[in-house]
Image 1 (cartoon, rainbow, N blue to C red):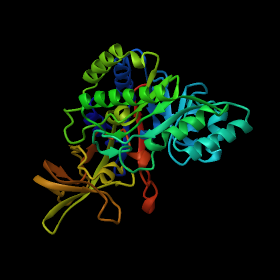
Image 2: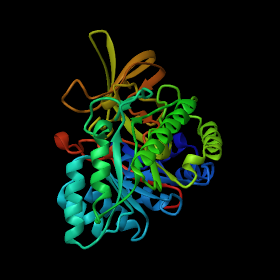
Image 3: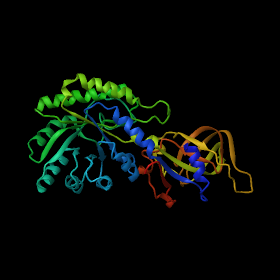
Image 4: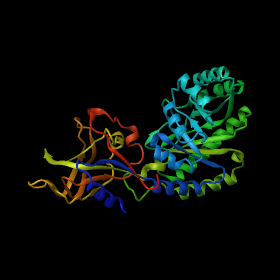
Length: 397
């Protein structure tokens, strides 16, 4: 059944206006298997659960990915609720002592250390627990780096150790019996759409890490190249060319002896789950203000914050619903440029501005596509205390 037919079928069973996130788990599995199968042999693929940490999503991915990337105690708990043994890598700036202690007690595979102070605290905690902490140093490279929607490195941000301070961090890690320095984490950007550019970025990472290994006599075992693989919300038929990327990456790794003994870790989120999810919101009202046609839907950006966060028009389709239970005329627009908003008491509650549609009516359902990542997971759910959307999982749960 196509997603539009599925919406029409479930709408027939709803008395109240429809508002739901819908996830196709079979589609998710197929995509993840396809992505992982194309990786070069020495690469490992971790899912960054911040993109979508719903339990059915994690359960679907657990047998397929090499592990999960987390950024809090809460995310560690979500992963451990799915699997007691799956590998976890733990990152993020500003970790508390309790988080570092919990990560060691939960036997995470790697901890991404973001500062020299954090490194020293981790040493102390590991000594108290009489253990050794497996560490990658996260480095904020000086650049030049490609540009993308979000920059984590090559510019002042809270992420990683400034490259100028890296020698001090390496020496600190080397002299501590409590730290097992396995390599480096170089997640520098997010939502890159250019496959060739991303291969060049990883080649740059290899150059930098090899230089540090030579300078400090390090045996590098792991290079975490981060995520950063993008989703093109503006042109859905022009997505990141994963096959081109992995083919070029394979050639790079085959001919570069410097990285022959390294494992390359990817920690992708959006790229994994975006296409498997939709946000369905029924049209409650249609009205015109100051020359602009507004379509107001059940729900809002308190459910699906991505469009207002990124300031883009999110892609959507209008699913026609023929039933109309009122006796008066059904509000409708034909061949109109519409602005789609939610129910919140703020003019910032906008999904789309000035999008052309052939027809939309009160009672139809606006179906936002590519809503499987950074939708519900980043939203301010209880603002104005509207009901939460349904969470519907189709496929083998």
